[in-house]
Length: 255
Image 1 (cartoon, rainbow, N blue to C red):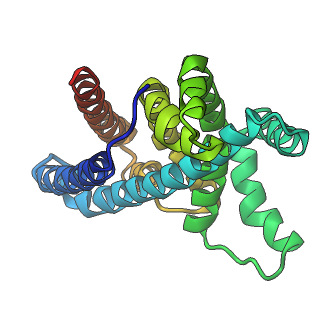
Image 2: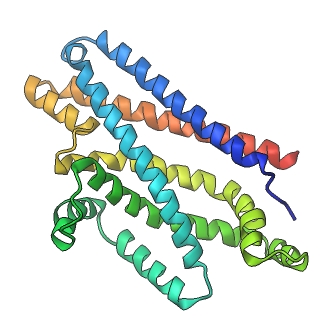
């Protein structure tokens, strides 16, 4: 039976902070390099940088929100209580069965009609819609990760007097995290690319910045190639950070 040391929490926070600083540094370097690119990129590098900044921020907020939603739904989805399991099942079925573009449009245009007090700008409408979407996929990943933990771990914890909540927190979830990290990161990579759909509600993220520059200069090849390379750079950085995290977790598991 494996317990989660309290120091792991601080190590995780430190790793996330270092990753955030790393992405900030990467964005700074990319912005400086774009200035030296030939036309029509160099003179419009600030627009690319602004679009990339919005893309990264919306991915960050949506990923955090989607992780919270995914954990709650994943626990509810695996609950033996029908009043928890059935609403989670219906939510996951509804979100996974409808296009993310429709969900973004619904949150931005239809939700204020249903709830007049809820007026969202383009950024927060897209962030909430994307977070709700990725949360449904995260829920299935987390549920599968929890089910992959051997049942003997929970039985041993309860035989020692741990409650169900403590067993889940200190025994099951720490082991499930090692299993679910790769698919969760795949969801974040997909989320980064899906953030381009926020351009449909007028949010000036990376893809819309590229569209505007392309329409202005009538040079779609270099502009869209630059946009594609920027997406590739950030998705590669996320994958690299994930590889480092997985490696660190494997090393700790053998200690």
